[in-house]
Length: 266
Ligand SMILES: Nc1ncnc2c1ncn2[C@@H]1O[C@H](COP(=O)(O)OP(=O)(O)OP(=O)(O)O)[C@@H](O)[C@H]1O
Ligand SMILES: [Mg+2]
Image 1: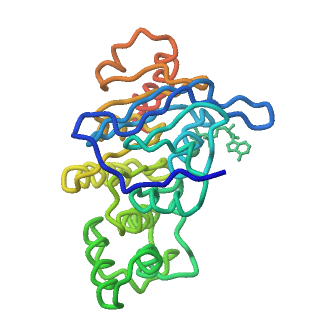
Image 2: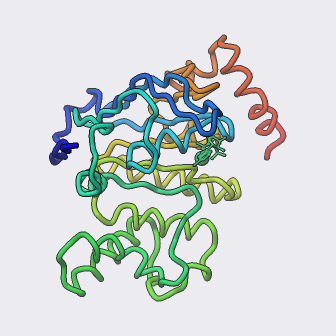
């Protein structure tokens, strides 16, 4: 089969659709996970995808980088049909423009912090050792870390590991950043630090972000719009206020256990 060339992304103006999921279906061994997802992500926004554990958030977002493929439906990124990409070369050209912060930090524990952040630069840019060193330093500074390059990831706290993973995600200056559960497993104060960092990055870098979480506190803080994935479909899309005011029973069912958790100060 001939492959469709993957052009350099030509981004639409801010506020215009950049990523469009249309009628996305995905099943595993007859377990139907996504059942007709329709969602548009606008250029320049931070869109939060909410949903309970197992709702299919990671499956959906990993389709953007070719780690999963839909059984049916279409995904376009700046007009490029992702389901039409066939070769790894095509995917690589697109992936270079996207940063994917994996659920958990997914740092290489056999490399130092500096080597982790340098990894994408070493593999995808022709740069001198000194240039790489400088960029690593800059990206670590961007996430609020200094003088940690020679440390092993295991020497860092969970929050710091998440920051290092984010620095690695930013290494190639992506246009689009996908954060999969960036605050999962962190205490509330560390989570707030990461949420502030994400918001600061959104202001300082010219990017479009998709943030997957079931942490409503982070979602409220960073999200321009929130989408709720429930029962394999997007059942709500709107602002934080609209989510809280919604009469949609699926939204209420999603919100109620979280409200309880928050009221208990957890
Ligand atoms: N490769 C796979 N093979 C079989 N089942 C899978 C695979 N990947 C995902 N699933 C199933 O798809 C469903 C959705 O998984 P997914 O990881 O997207 O959930 P999630 O919304 O990201 O959950 P969490 O909040 O816990 O991360 C789960 O039931 C999961 O077991
Ligand atoms: Mg997940």
